[in-house]
Every structure is written in structure tokens, then in C-alpha cells.
Length: 265
Length: 327
Image 1 (cartoon, rainbow over the protein chains, first blue to last red):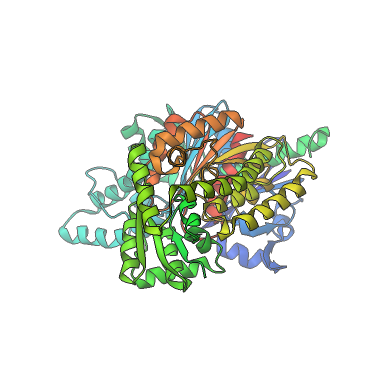
Image 2: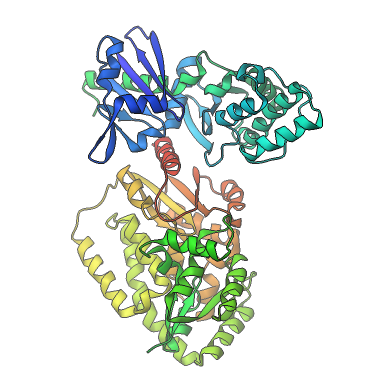
């Protein structure tokens, strides 16, 4: 059995995969995760996985981790893997495709990777700004007092939002509300804002097929907007938020089989 | 007490040393300060905007805190427009500013005129300046060797390659003392084993990094920077007798296309696997990134740096992904 862990900004995602390639997933609130399973060791935060993995029933052969957390968190007994590579491997596993553009919109960052013949050949990230991330959507839904599900149903007649800042955008939305714009148009405007922010990356690293992962991929309106505006075939795999953890799991499986063959390090 | 003259970027050093003055590259003083972040904050408290290049802010505070730098040479063409405002805010505080402009079209006569004006200000003749060129070239040759030992024999670390080349912008105020330190390093490395000859070979182009740990971070991951574009230019790597021609061949002030000729040549010579194109946050050079990507056929990683002086988690993630991609 192998284990992949994606230490995200909002959720820690864990995937356990058995020899027959069936897999189970778990997710934990990030802060709660570190509080319950982390402790300070020689000035660094160490996370002891054994207590966590008891829910697996058995200890996995190999554990691979990814996510921003991995830079400052020392995961005992885990091998670290670069985030973008983890998401690409996960996307390949979930879709069976080898030529596509990967779009991953997570809690706090957005990544686009160009995949050709199963290998990443170029990438871009929008990691300094929250205006195209899951956090932005959560904030805006809260301002409008609607659920994320409701937000992700609207794309008609979008209101034009000009603020480039996720925080100051909240004030702008309230202003539009007072002007008399309907909830649907406001929600559509929010979804279009995300599209506008990520469009330059998607255009530069374009493919006929776009695989969309990350929590934000559950926003149906955004999926349709991207497909229509860029004339690409957008595929959202099952459990799109777990692509990173799955990619780690697949990597863990490869590491284990290399060791078994005696050809690994 | 020899007079110290601060410089905001490389200018004809020969003229300053010929006048018996000590050139001080303000960028080097800023970045090696115990707390460069505090210098940036100081400028912001004085009124510099948050969304402006951190180097400019650092230079401002560095000059005002120095105590013994009352004259600076500000490059008004061949670096950036922020330098103009930097100059003006320093003039406001009573600092003497001598302007120097590299002609955008590399015109020989205009460059010669600029050099003669500076020579006039500092009271030196062409004879004195040429004698100083001989003196400085002796030091530069040692650093050219250090660069060759970096990319050809893989004996010098990418950090040392960066450090010793970048310091050629002022030779730390003491060319002979600096030369001795280079000779010591050369003696040390020539007897040491080669470094990772089978690792990835990278080029670093753009202004020197505001983060100190980028070179070691990459080497720890099996990727060596064996070409530091701008830092190498500071060493005047040209075999030329005419001083005006020397500063006409120096690529940094003359736009991206002239720089790309040099970059592409070195890329092929040094058999690079990829290029890191670094630009400072809020810097116009980020626009040139699209030109770099069109003209360079190797994989390019665009890196943006803001505050001094350590890599942040996001930048590390991008470096990791780039190295992983090249393997």
C-alpha cells in the first residue's frame, strides 16, 4: 500500500492506494491537522504520520508528500515531491491522457502546466496574488451570502468587476449590489473575474484538451466559461481536489517498485 | 582620506580610480548589510512607495546612512528611470550627483563625450585613465579565469562565480586586495575535486538576485548555474585596448537584443540545459521576458524577486518544478 499527502493551504488531502490501484481519500482541515498531528522538533514542525495512518489499517510502504507545507514541515518518513509534478501525475492517472494543458486552481494559488507525451514541458504559476483562487471565491460567496454551489451556477450577463485585489473586490461587489444588479449577474461577474485572471496563462500554454483540477474545478460555471471562451475541451476528473495527493501516491508506487527491482535509490 | 564616490550601477571605473577616488557600488553595500530589509523599510518611511523596486529603495537608505558618501554617479541612461527619482531624492538631501549616460544606440562619439565629461569633473587625463585600465585589467583576468573554471572544469561554485564577478563593479575599493582574494580562491579550487559534472547546467540572466541563497539551493538539487550574465559583464570580458570600445561592448546598458547576442553565444558555448530569467518586482525588465522567451530556444524559468534576501516558499516551488522538468 502507498500513501500520497498534499499539504494544502485549506485542506490536507491524503490518498491511500492498494496493490489493485483502488484508492481511498481523506481530507483534514489544515490548521486542525497540524495542531493534532504536529509538534516542534529541533525548531521545525514535525508531523508524525503513524497516528494518522492508523485509519489506514496498515502502515504504507512508501509515503510521498507535496504542497507548500512541505518546505517548512518535516514529514517523518515521507519523500517530498514538487507540487506541479504531483498534480500532473495525478491528472494523468485520473484521465489516462498524455497530451493536455493542466489547470489547477487551489485554495491560494493557480498553476498551469503543459503536458506532452506524459511529461511536463512548461509551466506558469500565479502565486503572488489571491485574485484567481479558491479563497477569493469563498470570500465573495460570503459577501453575497450565498453558497459556493449557488455561486457556481451563474455565468449569464456578468457584471464587470474591475478591482484587481481579492479583498478590495468585496467592496466593489457591494457597490454593484446597491446599484441594483441581480445576484445571478453578480455571481457570473465573480466567475468571469477568475477567468480573466487565468486567461493569459491558459492562452500561452494552450492545448485542445484542458484538464481542470483543484477545489475550484467544482465550479460548473467556470468550467463552461473556459470551454466556451477558449474553444477547448475541458475535462474535470472525479475528485479534482485530490489530483496532487494521487500524484504523490503514484510516485510512491513507482519508488516502491524501483526499490523492489533493486534499481532505485 | 581618498574621496568615496557611490555608483548605482557599473560606470567606467578606470576614471574613478585614476582620480584617486574609491568607487563604492551601492548595490553591493545594500545587499551585504546586516539587515537589508530595514534599509528598504527606511526608504518607505521616507516616502518611497511600496510598489517600487526594492534595490532603488535600498540604494537611497544606503547613501544616507553611509556618512562618508557625498557624491554619487547616477546612470541616467543605461539602467532605469527609477534612477532619476533616486537621484532627485538624494539631491534633496544634499548629495552631489554626477550624471552619466550610456547612449542607447551605442554611439562611440556620444559615449566618449560622456566619459570625457566625467573625467573633467574628476580632473583626470586619458593617460592616467589608460594606466588605470592596465591596472584593473590585471585583476579582471584573474576573474575571467575563475569564470572559465566554473563552466569548463566545474571547479568553482555558482555562488563564488556570482560573488567575485559582481564585485568587479568596484573591486571592493581595493583592486590589489581583491586580486589577492581571487588568487587564494583559485589556488584552493585548482586542487579540489570537480563538482557534479553530470548535473544540470543553468544560465542566470537579468539583474543579480536579491536573494542570497538561490545558488546553493539549486546546487543542492543537482543544478549548477555556470553562466551569470550580468555579473560576467561587470568583469568586462573583452580583449580590447580602446576604453570607449570596452564600454560599448559592455552589454547591460544597451537593451535586450544586444544582451541576447551575448547570452545566446554563451548558452551554446557553455552547453546550458536551461535559463533562469530573473527580474525584480515592479521592474520594466519583466516586459522583456516575452522577448527572451521568443528568442531563446532553451526552457526558460521566469523568476520575480522582491524583498531581500532569502528565497520564499513560492519561489522555491518554482525552482523545484523547473529543475524537475529539465531532468
